[in-house]
Length: 113
Length: 114
Image 1: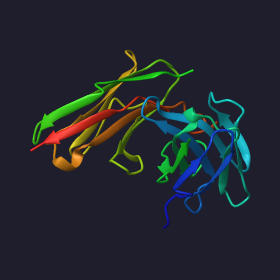
Image 2 (image 1 turned 30 degrees about the vertical axis):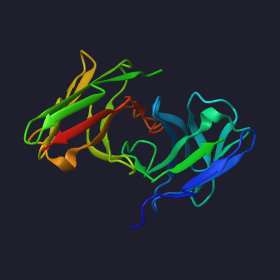
Image 3 (image 1 turned 30 degrees about the horizontal axis):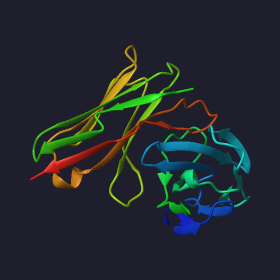
């Protein structure tokens, strides 16, 4: 069974640009969550999607957005990039909304110059 | 919202010794407490979890204890081995069917020395 797949693994952008990250969950998993990981702030929740609907949202500005498709694949977008957006963006999938256990992908490492 | 504090931030032990990592949470409605291990350059992986209706759970060399009254939970690793070296994150969540949002602690860098 394939794990959670994230693309791209690494990317470099400049301030003001936008970026789209992609996540394919484990087959059969319908919930997809996104987390931002930085050395200073640790793992911080961005949002969670289930059945193409955003179910939870963390405390991030509106520049951070996401969506989920009918096949459960998810994308997140960050517009007007700032230096502080440099981080590892982790996607995690789960069977349902009350499973608890998250299966993480390897992450997308974003560097903003 | 939920706030999770984790201590210590770094922990160094000799191989074979025990390691204990402690976390406290603020939301009394939290009912699910997982621990994730993240090796350098790798994804976080669940190593053990506990739900609020249980006080202790053990899996081989790893155990977790939960004190709901004091709102704290701990990870215990016995007979540590070099492969236990990693960053460990505790987390808390209110699992009610509304989602799997986890609030993480800031992590503990565990180093097991030979």
